[in-house]
Image 1 (cartoon, rainbow over the protein chains, first blue to last red):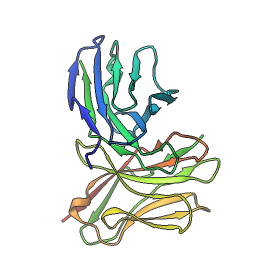
Image 2 (cartoon, rainbow over the protein chains, first blue to last red):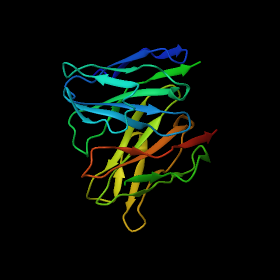
Image 3 (tube, rainbow over the protein chains, first blue to last red):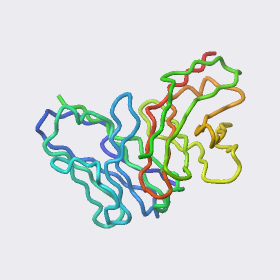
Image 4 (tube, one colour):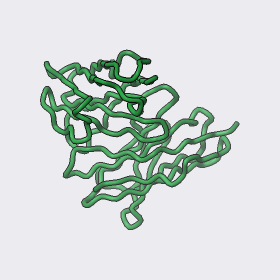
Length: 115
Length: 113
């Protein structure tokens, strides 16, 4: 089965610019997650979708970050305007269901560098 | 709040020797515990999980982990390390009552030939 697809793999922008990331989960996976992984740290959940509805966005900086999953399949994460501290790897993951015992399957991430 | 601690930033082991990567957790209820591995410039790969039942869980690539409720630990083990096991390992915990998966800070495993 094809894995979680993310694009782009790398992105370099200047602070205050905007950027968008795309994720296509594993086919049939209802739950989609976006994580932020800062160098030297574990991934931190930004937002979780169940189909096209938001389950948890408590750690999403909503003044600058937004995400959508309009048709319940692929998703985009946007940052506008970017700050230096947003430099990180943005990981997308999916799981078949939202149950707590379900393992998550990760994409290879987008590495974002803010100049 | 749920949390995970990985006390070692790096573990060094010689190829062929057994390896252990440590993890302790804190949750309010019975935990769901996971181990993931991350290779350079790649996403996290699922290795194994503990949900309930047998305290010794077997996973991918010969890895296993032992759940110890009294010590609130979930250490990752492998009887004989390979150079190709060198990577970053993350322990994660999920309280069944909450959706969020919380990761530790990771342990870098370096297996020398």
